[in-house]
Image (cartoon, rainbow, N blue to C red):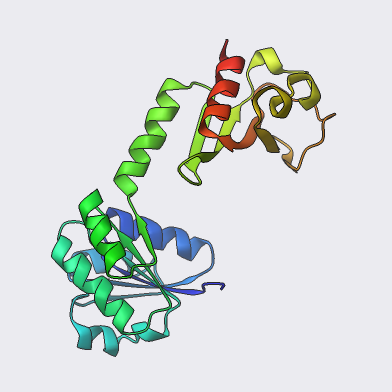
Length: 220
C-alpha cells in the first residue's frame, strides 16, 4: 500500500523533522499540536498545521484523520497522551499507525494496543552514532532485523583500484555489496569487474557479524 497522506500528532523535534522530510519527498502532511508556537513554526512547512489536542476524539474527527493513510504519534514527553492518541487513531480507522516510544515499556504498550510500527528515535540514533564512532569507515548503519544490517562503508585508500572480485566480500565474509555510490552516480547491483576508488561508498548487506568482519578487514 502506497502512503500519500500523513497526519503527525506532536510537532516536537522528531515530529517536525519527520513532517519536513515527508513534505520534501512530495507527500501531504497535517501537523497537530496543542502548542500554538510550534504550529506557527511549521505552518509554512507542512501542507496543513492546526492547534488542537491530539487526545480529543472529537477534535481528531473534525480534522478528518480517518481520511489519512498514516498517522504518526510523535508525542514524547507525555506517555499517557501518546497512548491515548494512538488508540484514537486506531479507533477512527487510520490505515497505519506509527508510534514514537521513549523507552521499551512505552513501546510494548503501543504494540499491545495495536500500533502498526513502533519507533525509538533516540535509541536508534544512539546505536547508529556508536557504530560510526568505533568504525571510521562506517558512514551509516540500518538494522533490518535482529541479525541483518545494511551498512554504508567508505572505501579506504588501500582498496582504491581494486575490483569487487579482488576483495571478494561475499566469498570471504558472506556479505554482499549491493551498490557503489561514486561521485558521478550510483551503481546498482555492481558486477565483479567494477573498480573501487578512494572515497567511494559501498552499500553492504549481511549479518551483523559478516559486516563487522568485512569492516575489520578493510580497516587494517
